[in-house]
Image (cartoon, rainbow, N blue to C red; front, side):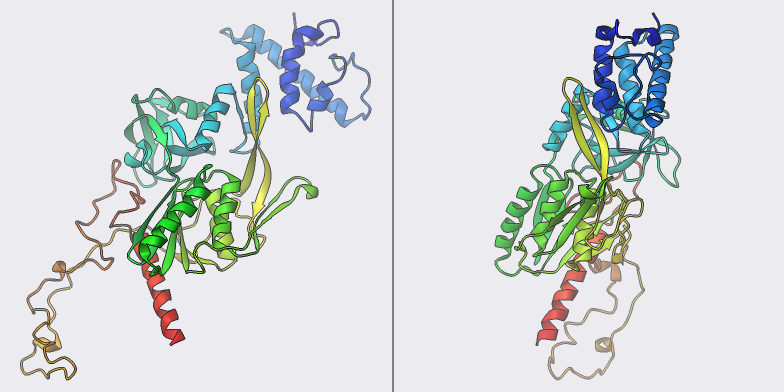
Length: 479
């Protein structure tokens, strides 16, 4: 029996499941039309209340029905109705933008677990870029970060199978698997030939906030925005503040390689550093859907200077925080341009079927900026780099000269002078780092943000130097 013949009043019950599924994903367009009392072919149905646009919708649905029936009956291999419908829905959503998609019941459950901060997988955030799976960011302390996967890497094969043509959900599903099982990714990195990386799947437990005291500077690292982020930030900052014993001079908020997460957590983290003013606004399709979120009194730092670190792996929620603090001149943003995802996705559950993830709004920073496809430009551009101590040769100093005058304030200064034959390599690097210089970043090297204790983090060293400079300048200006 052909699909067109099936959509009749007499065959209503046989199509009820299919029709309900389409109605649930078509709210605001064809969905209401499909909830008419009778499920008829377009030519058999009563004329719609508004002709023209509604009539065209019926024709398009009829076209879908014809294609569905032909595929169902003539495709070289049997395909279940469920597979055809799911793929059709996902195709409709994924064609809108890279972030809208259909989540079947399993994927929806996985997504709920992930936002709570623990899930199984590789620890990697990906998106679709012109049909290619692109890494937004690896998550700290996960198989992906330990294997050296970097923001901007293109995943071209999974276990030697090309990913071209797959939807984002299909590619993600291929990367999932039993804990402790291996998977081989073929990556393409700018300026390098394709190379393979083997990762072992693991339970990903995200401690979304880490913190430590670096001298007199509080270092706070946020790797993602999950349900525990705001509470973790407040708890750990207070701990670091107590350790400093009243000698805290500034805060580094590290949002590098942070792929984002929950909007409400981005708002609360921003609020933690602001006393007042707008944090972010979201603007949907209709003017009445605009929402504005404002800060409440109470800055957890007590007004200490803040430097925010970002890079190309900082996306979405992390860009909201960086943009809010930058617009309010509450922090200096340092690093490289962020990812540029300026849209908000809403998860809409479909009872018994999973959910749809639909882009429902754009967000704007307090000054009215949209960072969509543009990103946050740092106030100070500091690219990721390796610091190398150069051999400048041997220098003689005034104190080394025969008969040099003594310093009247410190007669023993000449005796403590550096010997003329000392080598510059004996000195500590300018960053104050200890240990060996970092090695070449090959396919299995650590990513730029290897850990919050890495002594070779050039961008972090510059942020700490900047805070020390601000503190020094402020103290002298007040004297």
